[in-house]
Amino acid sequence: MHRNSLKIAALSTCALATLTATTHAMNNDDQGGHVHYINAPRADAPIPRPGVDLRRGSYALVVIDPQIDFLSPQGVTWGVVGESVTENGTVENIERLFKAAGGADARVFVSPHYYYPHDHTWKFEGALETLMHDINMFSRPGPLDTENLEGSGADWLARYKPYINDGETVVVSPHKVYGPDSNDLALQLRKAGINQIVLAGMSANLCVESHMRNLIEEGFEVAVVSDATAAAKLPGYDGFEAAFVNYRMIASDVWSTEEAVEKIAKARGDLVNVSGASGIGLAGFDPVSFFRSESPLNGSPTIRAEHAGATYLFASERSREMFLADPDRFAPQYGGFCSYGVSIDILLPVDLSTAQVRNGKLYLNVNADILEKFNADFEGSVARANTNWPGLFEMHAE
Image (cartoon, rainbow, N blue to C red; front, side, top):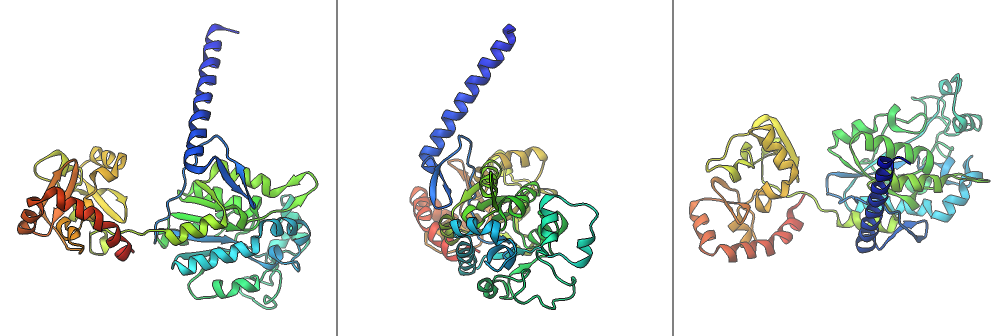
């Protein structure tokens, strides 16, 4: 082997060893070295696990194909998916997610699968598309015709109807093959201000995986609830195992239903002092400029970034880049509310002329007199505000 090739091989081996050691340490310290698999832990892969920190108002539960043909012994696919559905407790776990989302006032979106007569005239199909059409899976007489829908294979599983038909759940247009490329799911999510997805439904390696891939390509954070999915099992072919490997390698995280329910219940929202419906933070002043000059600079409406529920404007692209590299460093303390007010456990507006950077943090107060009180015992005021902020956040975050 050429000397350079030997060097490259050695460097590659060292890099892989470092990655493996680092990620094993990360998993052992942060994730216990395991990831949920059906009803038991499984040794995790030596790759990063970014996770999804759910933010109230920013995430939604998305359920794919919660329909009879997939999830009931009366459904046309039960012979191939029934074993996996039963093993995973899929039917019960999807219902637990519906309940958890309802209890947390979280948005819920359903992406269904329907085939109309004209869909059965397609000139070419993939393997399982052909099967679905042959067995009349998800068949309906037409997009505007619900005749015989009730109790058919295309209908919702009866136990899910109270959640889906609650007047709040968004049922998007049907996807036609596997992914949401052919429906309006991404549009509806964007219009609702959603950027984080808790994903579940049927079937694991087809529609759920295809939705996961598309949503990630569309810029959403996606956590897949693996035991709230299931897939066909055929001799030598386990659809759930195929999907699980790709979930772990592609999604931001893979959760059990137990983990998902806990995270949904604990999801926190945003509490930030912004200007009206525009959601502009710091009244349009460049947050980085408070740290770099004695007089803050007005931001440009065309140079902006989102952070923790606020839109910040910047005087330059460089300033925006600095902010995005470390937003928590430059964003104002306590969501931009009056620091002294937080120290006495109330939320007050601010006057930007009181802005000051101390110990590398930006503090604001309601007026000059309150600023003087805040600074009279600066360390004590900050300590009290730090203690009070989590409670105020929990009480008022949207």
